[in-house]
Length: 212
Image (cartoon, rainbow, N blue to C red; front, side):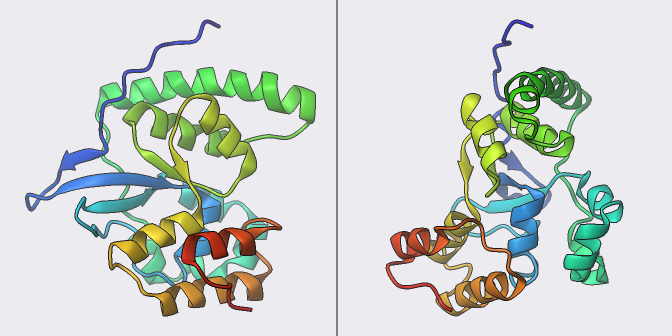
């Protein structure tokens, strides 16, 4: 399949009800689980001079509902306040939905050819759909998943990690250092740190050692 040429909708800046221009950012499931428990409400809350606003993909609730491993490990996700916070997703026109589906088909073929067949693993369908959404809308993606990072990079989708997202929140005055420590301590307690060398990234981003 020939590689299409994407012209992003530049949906990263969109006027919403109330007259604010939001800079939308889409968060994958792993980063949502790492951030949302202790940074609440995580989603649909504009912050900073650019009105940065985080959203999850509409399919996240279905992913959680039918994945018993996630249900057992992240039981808090089913609490009413978190369910309510996930109730709003990015508003899409019919044309945008159509282009996202077409882009998903193209990216899924890439995943099969470059990940699943040679490696036996790779981005899931929902992961691929999240990357397709970010690509079509021209918005940033928050993820710690190496396969998603590789897929996003192949198509010039800007991605940042969960820690980089917290650094951005800190710089914009949305959270403080105590909140960052609370989030990271939860990762350690849950044995759900982003990767083996996450403490190195923490020191680079925040200029201090990570909490134990």
